[in-house]
Image 1 (spheres, helix red, strand yellow):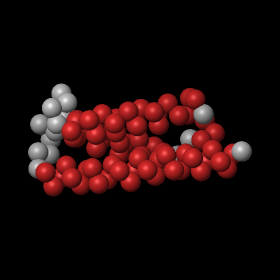
Image 2: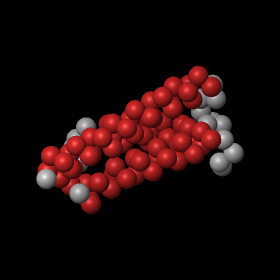
Image 3: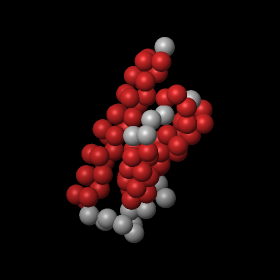
Length: 88
């Protein structure tokens, strides 16, 4: 399953999506409606990178998904950090 480093990036994206899904239950004041879009993007791109032998075998598509994943994860953690500062 982890014979390709892209599979690891897919797992990281799926874990990020699951942690964002758990956010309303743990800290509901930090969750916003725009986080749902990030959850969907993380699940779709993570599943494509995890199961890459079935979908999108082209290297350019995988590279584009990685380029999508890095700013999305950065945006998620930065917005959560700013929201937690705003509440204090």
